[in-house]
Length: 506
Image 1 (tube, rainbow, N blue to C red):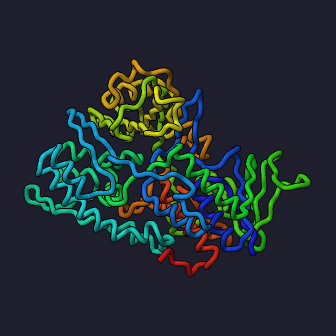
Image 2: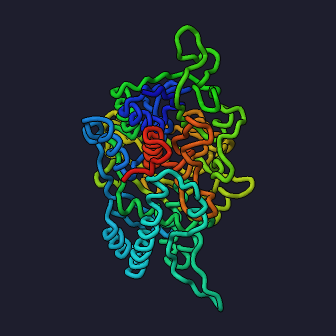
Image 3: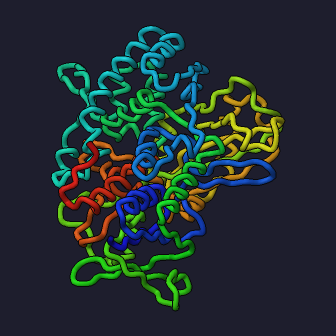
């Protein structure tokens, strides 16, 4: 039985902790804040409750597998997990609206045919066939296996089978998601739809690789889910599974450094006054350390010592954050209201230019995601509604956020008629709030790992050059997002339990 110290109580860290505890190890989690869940937080006030982090769960199979592998009670016995149908409703710049059904590629194509015309629906259907091929080529190396030592194979090969595009005397294939939209989809509403899947993750479709086509494919193929009571309930369930497996949690314990002995990790040390150990000791010894922190924090913990070998994927700092506006409304949620509506910007190029410029700024016309859960647990009674708006903003964004929140509310009125007349109050959650919850500089949100693009969208491997030290969560392989965090926990547990020969789930 090994002693394992886990730094941070985010979703990936807790997923690793539960799996390691079941394998017979003694696991202690040290979290600098006063609670678990990382970005999965909840704000409660005057009978209203809001998720302040991710509001939906793709690929629930990841967490179902975690619960199957760590106890008798399955995930669905611990949380009320429901499919969101329609998966999303879209309001385009020209006023066109379309609702896309959940986990039905054929249903999505039919919906687009009815809303945008037969040709548009056919093009999206053909695109999904190609996206499925990209998914088949990258699913295992990007999600289910430790990062390949020869990761440049993933970086240099574009897995999306783009359609040749002939212009004048040249024939080219799409290398970016924007080119996929322009050359293969053509309809500006389909282009906006495709781009919204990249923007949701803080990616500019003009520079995101064509392999980002897997993002809409995953949603259409595997569906979108919600946990009743709010997504914070998922964090609660994972935390309780850890406790049931005898994982020890110490909150308010800020790790400030790693201990090394004989060339391998030997434990962690703590900030003055936050020591979790008895007798005032400022260290906790461990045979393995699992760090659920950003690359910058890991550098501080190792005091600049190199933990990545030559030729490894460099740590990503992220480029985008989120602004979240929480709305308490008078009047109940109308029956048949979509859970999620994406209100597309009136000027997509200007929005992307603003977000990716130097210096980056806040767009005048943002794309806004509107979440309106049908969940009595979030409101004081059925005469009120809790609505959450999110928009991508640059990491570290500070000045002008309240004005941007007002622009978001204005955009959301296209999805919620009479919104301002119903508004009791609103509260803004900024990149600074994300930074406080997760430790990510500027509130940066990690992106999921994607192939091609020279490796820009890959993340460092879970193992390090320091024996016994592993990394977990959105800032390491396989990247950001709730499913990816759970997968990183499974990969780290496999590497510790089975050793370097571990090759992932079968």
